[in-house]
Image 1 (tube, rainbow, N blue to C red):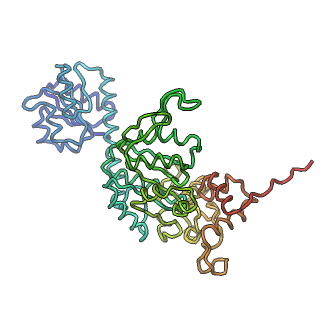
Image 2 (image 1 turned 30 degrees about the horizontal axis):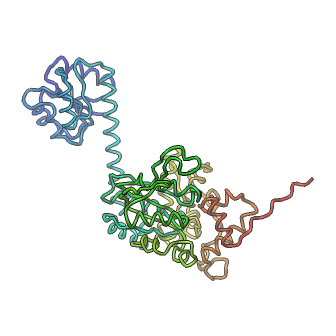
Length: 451
């Protein structure tokens, strides 16, 4: 039950409001003045304060100085634009003029109580995250993750360009968001762009905007995503997929702090902080002529390398339990737990798709579960240790990630579609196709359906 403090000096109105609020399920405490309210009650403990503007002694708005975290509705029979503006400037959530409609008052109360409840929930969640993990939203206590947290803490308050490296599915966007939220640009926008998801022919117009008539189909002027991020952070995921022409434009943004829309004759100033991410070897791309060396040196000012999930030890169990709890709540399922065998398999599997693959496996298991225990079959975990572990079926020789990818695809491609393979690997179908091409893994021929 939400508790409301009612401060009103007229007894008839005070009692009428109390009855109205109590009939609608609210607990009500009353006072005739701000002084009485602060003397008799812990005003900061209420979910909402409703105070008359004109009271004996101090005005009703003064109660907000004693309980700044509690939402306050100011009411008065002396309604005017001036008093409304002054009340809202003082921090009042709402302003109601007497005589007021009961439904109008109840709607304002319901909205205020809901906002207060959300504020408390958010504060509790933030407190839990700050207590348990150095960076909100990123779970991990292993040594490599502690190094990631330390580097985020050092570079976030600056405007330095950051390059986030790591395999697909390791959480590079989470790091980018943590950097933004801990920066001086936190009140500005964060624009996230997946460079691999935009066709080469459109990416310059998407990033830098275009003028009307700049190309076929440009029926009007359009602001680009870089310009949209002005005053905030621009996160370019998979920057290694950026075409060379777009790389040249991006270099100008970093060097001169300006952009030129496609088809424009003049440049525009922009103020953005760039965070780039990739799972590819940019140094090798530079050597192969697919990435500009001057841009590489510009974005590689501060590097944060995310470990693969298979390198994170007991973090796997911690992450899995967190994802299980979160998924159960999201899917409105009762609490579930992992069996001992499942936990063992979680630790021995190599997770080529990293945290994204783990998240997908947990969600699938929650959907399929008929009991309160998650067994290995529900997560489709193989009955073998991670490649490179002492009892692996490869004779003890360590497999590289690419060798494991090749083995996984060849073993499962006859029984799974490309979509299913990509989902189990925790990558997109486009990424699966690109990796097939690079590693020379042909797709199986379609089986003949007969005459």
